[in-house]
Amino acid sequence: MNRLSLALSRVIARVADSALGPHQTAVIRIGFSLTWLLFLLREFPHRQELYGPDGPWEWDLADQLVTTNDAFTVLLWSDGRLWFEAVYALAVLWSLLLLLGWRTRTMSVLFMVGVLSLQNRSVFMGDGGDNVLHLMSVYLVFTRCGQVWSLDARRARRSARARAGGERPRDRVGPALWSVLGFLLLLATLAGRTDGDPFIPALLWTVWLAQALWWLAGRRPRTGQPRILLDVVANIVHNGALLVIMAEACLIYATAGWYKVQGSRWQDGTAVYYPLHLEYFSPWPALADLLSASGTLVMLVTYATVAVQVAFPFTLFNRRVKNALLSFMILEHAVIAVVLGLPFFSLAMIAADAVFLPTSFLRRLGGLTARARGRLSPRRDAAPVPGPRSPAGRAAGETSPEAAPVPGAVPGPRT
Image 1 (cartoon, rainbow, N blue to C red):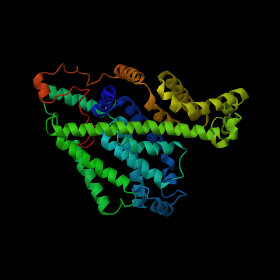
Image 2 (cartoon, rainbow, N blue to C red; image 1 turned 45 degrees about the vertical axis):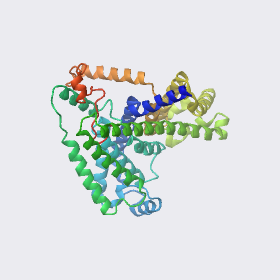
Image 3 (cartoon, rainbow, N blue to C red; image 1 turned 135 degrees about the vertical axis):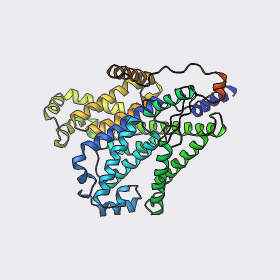
Image 4 (cartoon, helix red, strand yellow; image 1 turned 30 degrees about the horizontal axis):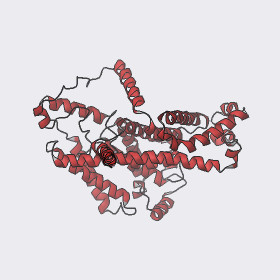
C-alpha cells in the first residue's frame, strides 16, 4: 500500500510540476498552423467561392445552419465582402504568428477562431483533414505549446539573461494586446454576437481573465503562492490536453481501422485499387497505374493499412513497435499526399501523429535544424547561459532560461 501511495504521489507531482511533452506540443503547433496556413494560401484565389459570398453555400443557408447547430463563426457577423476579406487575411496572419511561436497563448486562441470561423461558414468544404484540424485547434488552446522552438522561448531566454544582469525586463506588447482583445470581446458580447453555443465565448473569456490573473501574480516574486498555484493549474491543464490529443489520434485510427474491417473490399484486399483510379484522386495517373499494376502489392498495402490502424493504439505499450508502426503511418500519409493529391489531409494526420514521436528524436532534429540555421546566419541570442545561481538569486526568484516562464501574447499563463 505504501508503494502504491508513493507511486501515485510521484505521478501527481510529475503532472503538476511541469508541462510534459514540450517538443511534441511544439511540433503539433507547427504542424497544424503550417497545414492551415498553406491551405489558406493555396486557396487564396478561390476563397470567395469556398467561404465567401460567391460560394454555392450562400450566406442565408449558412446562417440558417448556424442558427440550428449553434456553431461558432465570426464570418456570419456580416455579409459584407470587406468583412470576409478581413477575416480571411487575419486567419492567415494568426496562422503565421502561431507557426513562429509569437505570443503563442493568444495566437492559439485566435488561430482557433480563424479555423472555426471559416470551416463553420462552409461545412461541406474539406477532405477529412479539416475535421482533425477543427478539433486540434481547440485542444491547442489548452497547451503550453511555445516552450521550445518559438519566439516566445527566445524572448524568455533573453529575459532570463537580463534578470541575471540585474535588469528588469518589461513587456508592453502583452498588456496592450490583452486590452485591445478584451475590448473587442466585450463589444461582441454586448452586441449579442456570441449568442448560441456558450462554449467558445466562455473559453475566450476564461483565457482572457486567466491572462490577467497571471500578469497580477507575475508582479510578485516567483516564489509567491499565487504564482505557484497558477503554474500548477497551467501544467495540469496542459498535460490533460496533451492526453486528450493522444487519445483523439488513437480514436481516429482505431475507428477507421474497425470500419475498414467491415468492408468487403478491405476484406478481399482490393480497396486500395479503387481510389487510385478515381479521376478526383488521380493527379498522377501514370504513377497510380504503376502502383496498382501488381495485385500482390495492392493486397499487401490494403491489409497492412487495416492492421496498422487497428493495432496502433495497443502498440503504445511497446516503444519499439510503436515507433515502427508510426514510421509506416507517416510514410503512408506522405504517399497519400502525392499519389491521391491530398496534401493537407496528410499534413494534418502527420501533425497528429507527431504527438507520439520520441523526445530524443525531436531533440536531435531540433539540434540539426539549429546547426543548419547557424551555418546560414549566426544567432544573435547565442550568448552563454548564466551559470549557477547564487542563494540570493534563488531567493529573489531567478530562473534559468530553460525554466523561465514563456510569456503569452497577453499577460497570462505560460505557453
